[in-house]
Image (cartoon, rainbow, N blue to C red; front, top):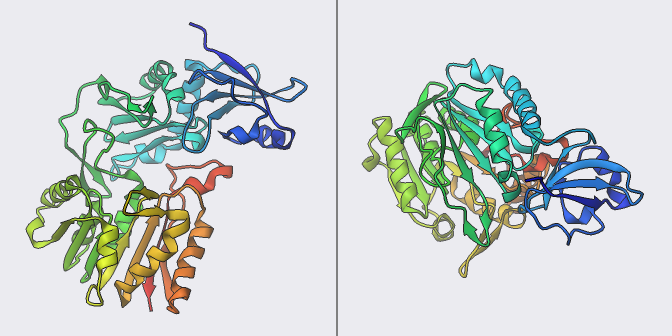
Length: 395
């Protein structure tokens, strides 16, 4: 069945953005979008005079209505197109494929590799495709055929990070190869870590935190460590492997506690000797008294929370949260702040950190600051979507 093609007129003020390859398409760029109905339909972007500008696809996500695919009018959006994009991305990761110390990395990073809404991760030759909207999911057959023709794999799984009519898309995550016996173990810089590919949307291992785990391990010796919003506890494990004398991990879910125990037991670390709290980390912070002090505090809050009890937006509320965690850090202690919020870049993030310390009339020194990871390239116009992190010492 032929794919629907919608003509879309670009506003005069946005023409140069489209010509420059602006990857994220949002409705404010166009004169009219109410005729766009079918997810995955191709968008023929043009001027009022019907001059061709670019081709995109329609797929609603948090910030936009689709993504730009090509500025070549003759380019077909088919299996060959996806194969060429993925092949270039694979070539960019040659150093990772040849590195025996790293089993997991990102193979394809959305718009940074030329196709917004699509990511592909490698977990020790088990591959995970994440479809971030219904539109890109409609190209699944072409993407799968392209990927299978380019890689040697143990298995291929998928995650569908979107809903249709407010409901998750049901179906088996397994796509090809031989099913893994999860949880399985992989190596990251010589450190074994557990992961799952068949347990819902979560893998149990955030590969983007690879550098964070290394930094925590490097600086945790002889310190009492607090890990807030600890998720599956890989940073807690890194702290203990780095010589931390004790750790406290705080996350609201029982799943987090269970996964943290799994990670610690993998390293033959006594989980019962550590404090693992099933508690809202925001509540833990709010309830902290003057005696709640640590030598090393790690804070990785969600980007957005809206409940009856709490509203939190990282772009607004992060400085105040940092102030609270400064109080929880001993003088001379370390504070690792990290966020995945896509609404501000590293420069603004660092201003937030500085603002928090100045508000308290405190001083600090930067020990380490994150830089873009080679396997997570971002388009030049979307640098704010990259994860951001900094390790500071409170003076």
